[in-house]
Image (tube, rainbow, N blue to C red; front, top):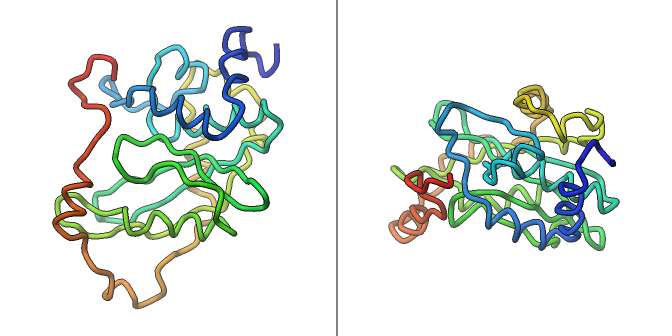
Length: 211
């Protein structure tokens, strides 16, 4: 058994042999609304529970990438402090020397990115205009983390029955790089009414019993 996975788990993850296949799989997973409290489930638990939120989806994605012979890299996208928004975690991959991202989200934005970005910074910037507060239209994406290679944690996290708070903590403590030049926040335009309307679209409602 590789990574401690069962034959069935390994078969499922090996079938996700490309970033597009991984993204399609994550899109079909119901959103984890954490109805019984906060979770940071391992890939094994995600497969069993059949639901995930962003970091849970990212960890499943990098496990599939790792099985396919690619480095398991995740990156944090962080909002401005005190704005009431939450961070978002994506799985990174490269094709032809260019970066792309696999993303589990419940919204119409902050989704998959094709491998067309020269650097993680360029990729992070692609999320800036879509990242805003639905109530006010204020754009809040502030910084992104240095990619985190999951190989540094060994392999036990893949099948852990415990919540992976240590990984979440390590990612938040990772060096982060600011996106907006100093003094330029005052020039950033709020999302308009059409963007706000699109931003309210969600894929999985909390009332769905599968979430």
